[in-house]
Length: 126
Image (cartoon, rainbow, N blue to C red; front, side):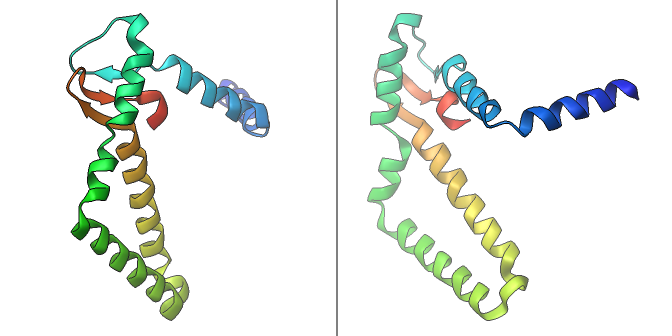
């Protein structure tokens, strides 16, 4: 159990430092290559990233009117529930915020292009 205590102390030390999170962000962004269903070579990584960002799925979803209207009505309903019931509606608010952030993360990091097919920017999504 002594090794578990050492690991716990090390994690407490690292998570208390601001540079640890910056290091994790940099490692995730630079060391996780993008995925493309049609394949690519290492020198093509900037083009793959450009294609993924310029053909992001979220751009197609923004053009659809009914999902946007439905999400706005749902957000207003959750806000009204929080105003009416306070803490009892906190889980609904948390779930709505989580779903929104997840949709944004996946939608901005996933794209479909003619040149590379399905492109997932794993470093961006993490």
